[in-house]
Amino acid sequence: MLCGLGAYVLWGVFPVYFKLVEEVAAGEVLLHRIIWAVPFGALILSVRGQWRELRDALRDLRNLRWLMLSALCITWNWFIYIWAVVNERIFETSLGYYINPLIYVLVGVVLFHERLRRLQMLAVLLASIGVLVLILQGGVVPWVSLSLAASFTAYGVIRKQVPIGAMPGLFVETVLLFPIAAGALLWLMLTQQAAFPGAGGSTQALLMLAGPVTVVPLLLFAIATRRLFLTTIGFMQFLAPTLQFITAVYFGEELGAARVFCFAFIWAAVLVFSVDALRAGQRQRRALRSA
Image (cartoon, rainbow, N blue to C red):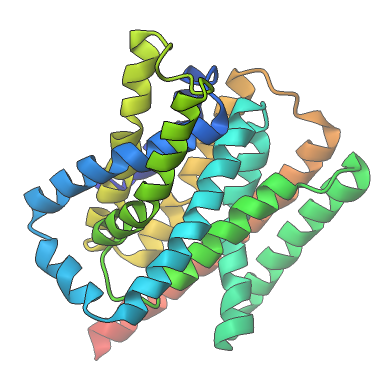
């Protein structure tokens, strides 16, 4: 439980970290996030003894192809998120991760022919109304929110195709991206466009911490998912966007009437979704006890 809470709290206060390095361009921050995740990820794999799991998963080249695709999805997700925080659009990141579970539900229906329960249908409808209100009343399409939700959903669906744990999978993804990231950062340095060489010691240290900042929450999440009911994890997943919402308020972002209405519908959808998840979990536990 503590690992699960730790993971979602860290993801929830992520904007604070990116605000601390906002003097660095979003693209360069992304490069550091990839580069420094590799050595720290290797350390975690060694401590947890997961190298064999990694080797077993990569014996099938099909798994490697899936991980290359998931690496592209998570890179796009990371870039949009960093850019949004730096450009004072944290409310939109919060909205994106609120609607992400509902996008998962829709993907399950479309791709895997799963059937929606009534409360799930109501939750999706409420969330759709909320986004529509924002578009019509606010006059803008929340492309940041939709991009974050879509890219992370695609990432999750792709990762389901690979029999590999969260930590080894992330390590492979960052290793695949490492040559591109290292080459891009080197080019930025040679053309004197990189902020890292001339940044202060504190900023350099923060950029090097991008690896642990990326890996630690995922490690805590991986530990939690092996020991908690999925229903519990389902409730916890709304903690991160709630903390992001609070962070946006703290940094003084303007909420506006359209966003207020939108979030009202989203929170109603979250409530309905959570009630449905609780009921489904209770039915599953009763079925397991009677089996």
